[in-house]
Length: 270
Image 1 (cartoon, rainbow, N blue to C red):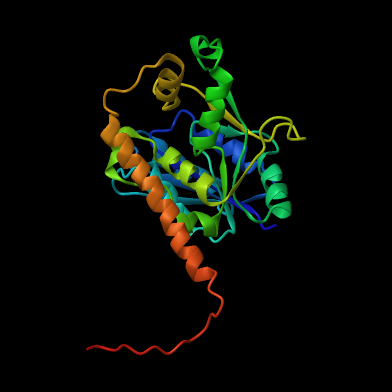
Image 2: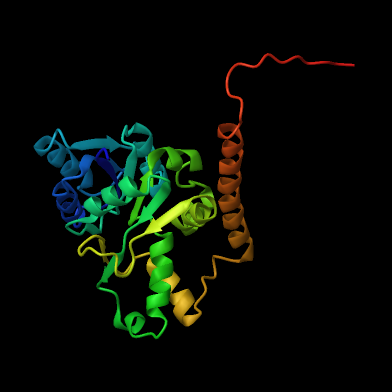
């Protein structure tokens, strides 16, 4: 299989970006590493330029003029990529040693998969979460809706329309989950969770005070629902997911048509 491009959206990531980049560059299956600076206000953009100068054959850099959010940053690099498969990693996480090797193997033997999800190992996760009896179950939910462990067939990703960049998700987050739910309804989602046969094939997730997964853990483990995420917001998010699913169904009608080619049509009016 051809090499895999990796896309990292970067916003004020000066303290963690080197760790993420290092973990990507050591992957033999890497095609290009796309670093998309989302109008950072710290030293992130300067660091990206330095990394690109050091590895001009491996790193491509893009700089957004205004902050547009992780969804648009990811989508922009996905459009520019020419690889058949693209992976998304967050700037505060890191790949384990054989992550892209495992991904390459999966798509070689399961080319019908639209998406692969790698296992996620949590670090710096507060103990009151880890000690909860339902933590493992909720963590598996996180693994199925986050973006940082995804490797997509690029054509399928583009057919989905990428990560939804609706204003709702800019305000509340959750674009990863909206797309993730749509993928489960529309394609084969391969996973390498639990006894996959290889070690060090996942993503190291490093927790911090502002991590988005904290909201998921608080809600699912302790019933602390967000006051800004009411039923109307949930319905709107679900509608986005169903829009993605419908878009793919419409595309399937086109691709599955039995008689491709030129067809002359006539229109009749009364």
